[in-house]
Length: 279
Image (cartoon, rainbow, N blue to C red):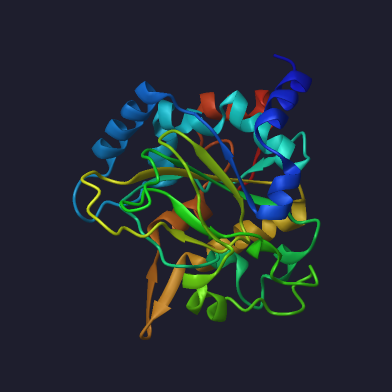
């Protein structure tokens, strides 16, 4: 399949215009039922024990099946269409998670006084979440979003500080709140400035929740380096006067391309015209 054909196929499923207006799109059926079952079994094997809820990037990349999802032709074609970039950047921010439920938030890298550049119109960063169960209205399994909240800086340049806390307290009745209607094997791609939360669990799901996550961005050497540098800063967090490393973020800051990546993955990325960025 040629690059033009891939782009045309992606355009039929996802729309850069919809992403710009709503802040997210859904790529249906990236994994079929058999592949979903395989991915769930792999995640169960890796994420054992009550304390194991998130894979390190190195462990994720060591699994050919899970890591291969990131570079699937259909996924890469959609990312290129959404970013408007024929050579997008892949960050080493790849993981699988088990039973992780997070309240309303915008990802930490996109909040605070050093994050003004991420609100510039030319900046584009996509978070990708492939969920391995249906997102049920009662049992959860995916994410809720505040539609168009990626535009909340208003002037587009971040000179007006986005007010995250106030919306977070009043979202219960907001007409802009949406449960993203995903089924097992669907990929949600959202603008990283979008406010989102794990879909609330109102009744016992009777199953583990799993998701596979990775992030792509538009090529921009300065901003790509800024993003990786912020991950390095965030890899140590201080609470109550005690500083502790965040293992997954600390590892991401240490990774170097290509030596710390499986040869097949680095070669596959090069073949797909995907650039892997590390510090």
